[in-house]
Image 1 (cartoon, rainbow, N blue to C red):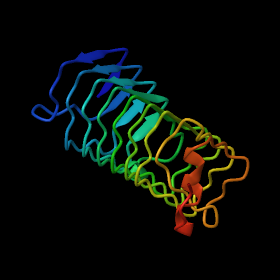
Image 2: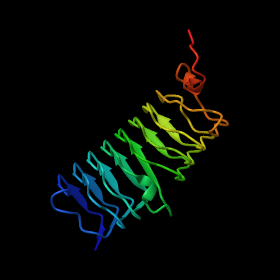
Image 3: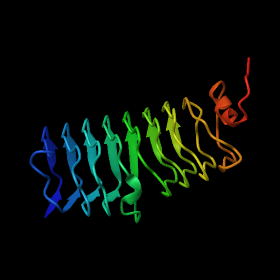
Length: 187
């Protein structure tokens, strides 16, 4: 099934499943998708607002020019999405325990997001923006963070020896998150 220019409002798809298919220029407003399998679905130029997508399965799902605004996306493994033409942005979203393992996310925007314990291992986040986002417990290992902007991000811990941070932007006092590995005390 193909859906174009449609709005889905206040639907609980965890009880009545979303029809498999391609959704283009669609808006999902205040919908519930918890623990739904959206494998092989295609979302192009879609917007999810105030939706709960926690624990959604996304194997081979296409997310092209998709916006998530005020959404709950806890525990989602984005790394199993279709990586071809992948394009997403997040604003005011809960992304606790999300996995972006080995993903190419150049110039990704995380605006006012809760990224606690998110997995960014071996991801390419060059030129990405972490605007007012909480990165407490987020894992960065062999991650490309070149030219990424962490100036307003908080609670990050990034080891400069095992991550690429050339020309990344940080601000005081949170820049001390680059020294966590040293187990030193700064007064």
